[in-house]
Length: 257
Image (cartoon, rainbow, N blue to C red):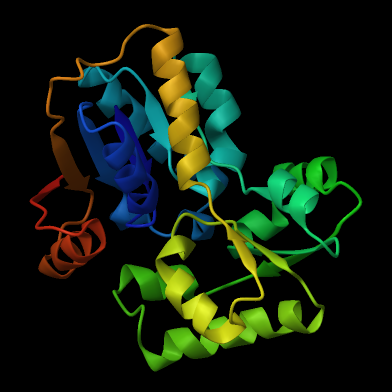
């Protein structure tokens, strides 16, 4: 299957997919030349998503995972109308967080683009279940993660800045509304302690993919060992090093044709 994001964020989902479905082949594309997607115009984003989808189809993938919240809320509906293979998107886990919150106070960390997106706002309204939902845009976090600066002081300061208003409001549930943010869970817990239940999207996306493959009877043989390929639209030694660090083993990063 094909998995893509504007950078390394979608690796959080690709890794979960590979661990759950180790017999499936996986192609991961980081569209780094155009990262972050939240900063580019909608027509450019649409062209990039369709270009990557066509690349995946040329490789005869049996499903495509849009491992990016911005691309999901902005382009996935149009993509599904034009492509026949299953397309799985990512949506912030607003519904389970709102249902499980003990004090009905939920915070969501998102990119600036997602925070302003009307489809995302409608999603919040649809699933908030009478909970108070506080949306916190987090400009700069994705860039720091893409630069491998997850543990540096600047990243910690930004997280503190974005989490403090939510913590002051008394939230007990935090939804990670960007696929990059799971790489900051350790740092989030260092600031918020154990008072928060954190919701990310890798597991539900993986389970949805698993169900779709089973429904279409296109699962690979359980005896097969799946191969993973990693491509980027802007390969660099720094990015290869970051890929390897986040994936947990050495990655051979190749340029996207």
